Amino acid sequence: MFTLLVFLIVISTLVFVHEVGHFIAARKSGMRVEEFGIGFPPRIFGVRRGGTLYTVNWIPFGGFVKILGEDGQARDTPGSFTAAPFSRKVLVVVAGVVMNFLFAALLLILGNFLGLRVGLFDPSMAAIARDQQLQIIQVSEGSPAQAAGLEALDEIVGFRLSDGSLLRTTDPALVQDFSLANAGREVTIVIKRNDEHRELPLTLRESQGPTEGPIGISLALTGVVSYPWYESLWRGLADAAVMFVAIVFGFAKLIGSLFTGDGMGAQVSGPVGIATLTGQAARLGINYLIQFVAVISMHLAVLNIIPFPALDGGRLALLITEKLRRRPLREATERLINGLGFLFLLVLMVLVTVRDIVRIF
View 1 (tube, rainbow, N blue to C red):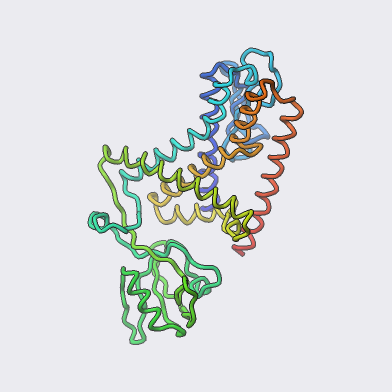
View 2 (spheres, rainbow, N blue to C red):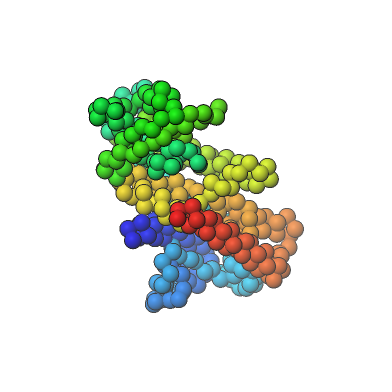
């Protein structure tokens, strides 16, 4: 229940922020916003103010903005989306993406001020970091670590030795040396998860591939680093820019994998997978949750700008196409393109959700 509640709050906030961008841009561009909804229908109640119906709806997943003429109708009606100049239509379309980017940047600014957990790959960073931990970054599929129940973000405390003593460590090299020395044997690894220490039996594999060790995990020394407010401002913006570029390249690689068949698509998570990760981040603390929500917000920004029908990027592509053709698409054609795109995304979401459920259970 906790995970579901946090997930609903997070995803609703991110979608709401996105729609607020469209709403503000439409109003500033002189367009008639017919409805601004919090949640999705059926409607609970609504209040009309300034020509816009503000509604609260039963399905709590963000919100929506209904602009006159957004589906290609009312082309000759003043105040409609279709009657607006090209530049204003582009502004309205990209405003949601911009808001998700800015929201992620704001969260990263806040996180840099409060303190974010980061990888300590630079000695100067390690010198100012507090609460240093040796954390699991990734668990390989089919590895001894996965069989033992190790999870990403677990903190490795050390190993329980045969004489009952605890070999503590925050050094990835020591973990690697210990596992290589005990390859093929069963050892007891001590981890910390949700402020609880756990001792798990771990059977190390004897033979490893060229890129995998006896355990099957990736490790990093992490710590909490914070900055003064004035430094947090530019660091948050810089982090947002770096994150945006990294996610763009990640999406490009993912789309490329669909044609090369290298299996990256199997790593994609849907709502269930994201909900699970959201719950984990929330349990680890506010710093983790801030980072995680910033990452999801930036993913939404990049995803929505992809030129695919039913996404903001697809709508932008249609606008550019109309501009180049110097005449609008037929209303029926535009609706068909967006409808097919939405149907494809819906089917894709269902398939990914089913796979997430199978993976969990």
